[in-house]
Length: 279
Length: 261
Image (cartoon, rainbow over all chains, first blue to last red; front, side, top):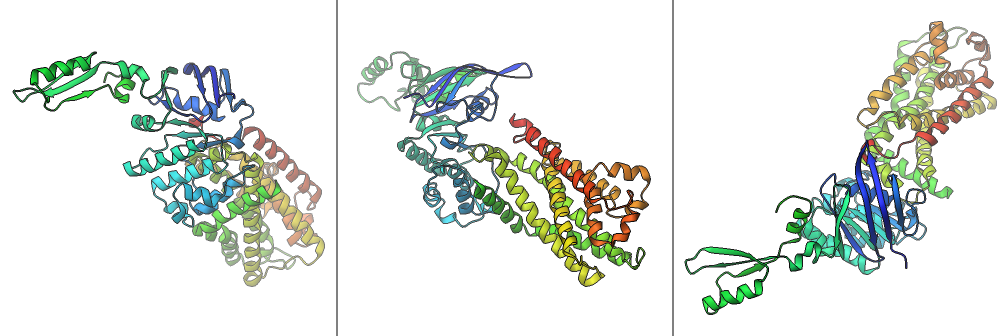
């Protein structure tokens, strides 16, 4: 089966300066792909070209086998934009039911509302919803058409930790149902929790694509070993051979090493290094 | 397919009806105007025809223009700013459905406010309603053609304002000046000749002229600038505006803001 998204040599220039400068990308069916990158790196431009909101200057783009610039497969794609859509005077149920009409094989609006956790709010006017609940409504509108591919643009910005966990569960449920998901986010732990693969965009280029665990050779990178000395001072050492180092420490202490930790660089450390900000 | 347009209209009408202050001010506006005018000008403009009979045509015209042109040219940029249009664009909704929804909402408002206006004017200011079926028919087609032209112009003009915030500043003077030069607030023929000429390029003047043919006696046609109510030309000018505005809507309508690309 062809991939959900296939991009070759994508370029887009604004007023002479390249926003996207030769991006190649492939996202498989059923995959959760997270796109990371600082603001202005070309992340939003890339996603909006895939969504069919912007035209590209050059390159090949195929989304579910169609060219989004000319024939965006709207009926099979769900888009959850950043803070959009205000239907203040309508109820959650009215909005979801209305959007369901646009699609050729929509899901049951009642089931969708329940799925995003707004069952109790189905009869509430949307202006009475909290920020997190509005975001859930956004997602409900994105999935009511039963999309094969779902775009989520910074879906959990402004969420409290509990709301974020609940939201993640919703995304995992969608993935289990076979939906391909492309997600942009500023939260590294979100990418790590949800994504099968992450791509890092910087200065208009996709500089790395890998699983969250392996991005930037995290698994083989130098580890930091820290422990408390007999004098009670916290000591740490970066080493390429942490196992050997720890066993030497264990010999020195003749048993348990006080306050021992061994850490690899976090996804955030690796990411910051990649985009040129020293961790 | 058609039902989608109907449901879009229902959605728009629901949103309108649920914002209470908007409902009150929009629907009562022409009735308030006729109350002001009817209270100031108590005499008649000749041949036993009251001022109300003349000005009610301007009030209907201005009500239709406010509902069609002014409100849409202000509302659409605000929706564009809030990302409502972008959200619609991201769904398989055929684009005409959005416009159909607006047309239905405007039509709904136009009918309601005109009925309120005619009721108030008849009950309190001695308005005489058209007496023949012919005149009601003329009333119907002039209104429908006029509101269509205004609505399409409103949609087309919505792309002029770049932000929702600037829209009222861009739209209001246009609407206000048109009202002054098109014979809404003054007897049209009392305006300077050059002003009449300028007004002749825009739909409001023709809409009001068509309405005068309905509410004034036949003999008043002689006082029009062209020597008659000239209904064929009313139809042609309004029709041309519909076509031109529709072409502008189809070619220049902006779904996203500059910021969005």
